[in-house]
Image (cartoon, rainbow, N blue to C red; front, side, top):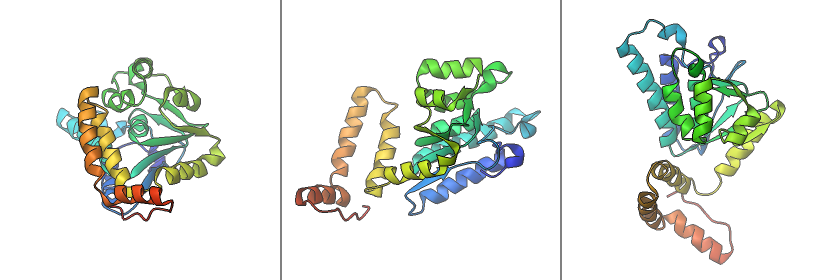
Length: 239
């Protein structure tokens, strides 16, 4: 995100840029993508300068475009990691919660501030409440208070907290470890995770059993089994 003068606020135009960029990544042979922000903050959320006075039609378009971005990030087969160097608020916090993984600088902070304002963070809370415990999500949402990076780690919003000077290398390290192996298998696994995680346990098992059984017939699954038995490195075909 490169709108430092607007604190990487998510205007309608910027939301479309991000959505299209993720779609392009999804159609490529890339293994993963890092979402980062330029400037003093990661993202300040929606851009109030274009929202104040907007009508219901315009607000629906903005929020549905934001939702499309979030769903695209989880729909593409690649691993998506947030590299959070500074403040992530409201829809900016939603971005972090939506990413598959997240690494934060010790200088990062997180908030869904609508709880202490006049416009509650309804849509950011969809992602946040699926990433952290319910009571922690409600504390963020109802108080509107900012939490530091270590609290975000404790609550499960991010995977790692590192000194600022190590943020880039730590993010790359996690990305490299999260993308090793068969890209095909990982893409199926990511889609399967986001599908089953919202199901009841019984339905999730029914879905996962069929998915795993079907995936066992892929070339990479068979190659993984053969290479293990033959004690040799696998030769992935990504199919």
